[in-house]
Length: 506
Image (tube, rainbow, N blue to C red; front, side):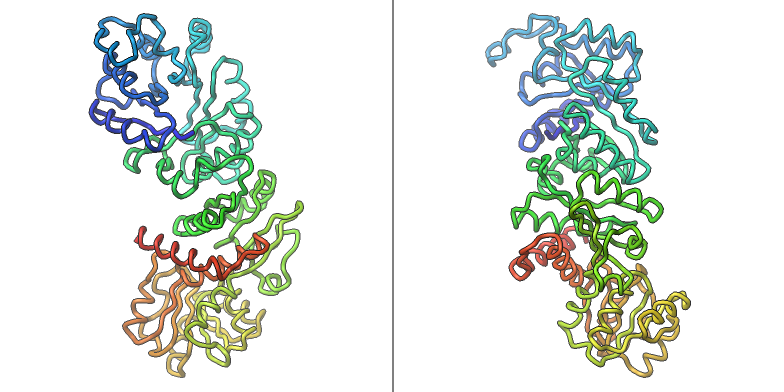
């Protein structure tokens, strides 16, 4: 279920936000602590006018505040005219809170004796017992859950701030073990995947914002994003898990294009972006396999580091020394590379690389894969890099020429045919070295155009956008993940969605 957070703060805004939630949410959380005024009569009016289920929350409340919250159902001056609306007159003291569509959120940090007394005093009130840590994830999250379970509640909520992708996946594992009574939320950038994947692991409620401006916690997604992009209402324990790992991953449009293709192909799967550093890669892959990932895309800086963590590697990827695609199959993690073929397929739409001079800027995993494929297609490859030693090491492994970025001036005087930029820099070279008539490609996917490509156009070069390579390599990944994938049939869908994603986020 999706729960939108109602922050107000004015009564008019509260009503507007609830009304806007009706088409997209299953319930709403009334964040009373964010409101200008908490008026008992107004709260009852909301219950009368909106039938949607509600959670009453007063975050950070003292015991006195909570007692006042519990007392909200007391009828002192209810207008009998409301009976004409079909709701009748609230005459029972706890009728509002004992409704099957009203929850009360109580912080686990309150006095345990008060909490115990409350549970005994109000056995019919639906309670969400919650714990929050906005700075970290506590070391023993299982023990915390066990301690919370000692108290009667309909649902338990643990919202913490993971400091790594590993901690985020551990939250998903705990949610799966809880068998449906735990809402486990990872806040911040590492926790985003827990908000998306919650339904896959049995999470009963996903909290979402109506708009980005109305976020109530770090990393909270909008309800519309969950529904439109991640197909939240279709996610369950049978949903296959795919994703992108690397650091950074924020600029990737992979989650947009892959989820779109899943929807078009009617594949029951979801694709998420997860920031993973080199230091946590080995442990992450162990847990990713355990929680059920079926495949992963790999980006910088993991394309070379991941090799030592795989059970088997495609011979060509092993020869390249770089992997961008993982397949989890029969208890093993298999590595492949679609970067090289993706880049060269995009490049050769503008002209063959056979016997042509191809300059590659950079010496990382993508540069390695592209250089390998270019040589396989019998082009004359030169690796140029700021760190000349890295350029030499890569060139020696592949059997091609190398040099520093400053050497580009020499190749400009000689003339070259293709220049492929494989670094994260927007303008890694002197623009005066852009050779008129050459084909220039920048692997950057977002934004669509870069300073390098803009200069290349001004100087009469042909250009190839990074998204064009992205589409080609993504097609290769789908071929590895899904047997019988008809790449020609679906390529147009992937390209149109990639262009739309770039336009929407420009």
